[in-house]
Length: 371
Image (cartoon, rainbow, N blue to C red; front, top):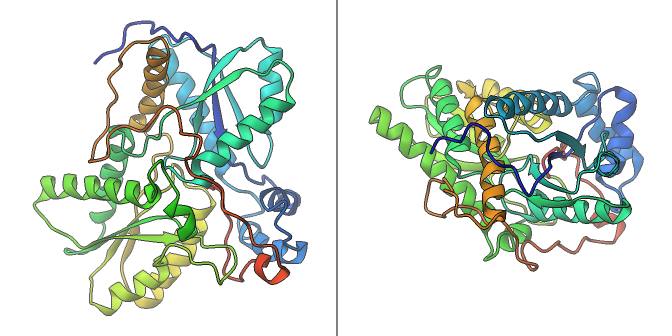
């Protein structure tokens, strides 16, 4: 349905882009990692080891620049349809910090805003933790605006469509018969078990998205391929079960079975931040090269017009819903559209281990910019 020339944004008077944050220079790396792991008892020496992943890229994560680009794209998209809302940006773990952004919004007279979170799937770390951070920051700020979170958007046609095109482009670089490895951030299996209102939401949503991308590619080409959901960026105590298989182990298995190539499709990520450029473009690419397995990595949505338009449309959709209207709620797959309001018991936090041996991060831990 086409938008009116100037869609009504009420009851909202602003949009907030909320992301994870990342260091922007070498001296930021250790303080950033301390922010991310605060309260977990991880020694600085171990954090410095993890920080080597950032130092390999000049001590600068790409995530903040990617959010700046997304902000600019959103502003242009809003202006195209006359959506008259200011857009603010805050991070959980690095500047601009969420609390500082809420103070700025309060000073500007913002009373109610809708928040776009750069995490598309249900889980504690991908949804509830952001909502907890919002609640904590709001409690610290006098006259803080009321904040509503957009629904999960992984199964929106704008998100899925972006990955259909980037996966097709990746496959075009590979030999006939190449497989597809859909990749997302690993989380503890216990976290997946309680994700979403009915449990297992994290894996279920990823499988549904992967199935939709696969089905569309098969419809276009008539080619049936091997597809798998695999994981990257495992961290945390080695004795705690996390979702598997790891992408590198999966590449070894593909090579052993004679697959002629693989398209690595990071459906768990909205942009090419550290997990993508380190875990996939660096580590997984090195594994594939060692195995002599042709690999091509599909692009994340980033500032793809389909993705940007989707976010804009979700803002309009939520405003209509809050006014008591009945907007269209586009989605694909079997799960239906995401929910506007999470249940109080949805995605509960896990109890963290407390002994020194349990809180030590394994040497395989990589940087995390999505959780």
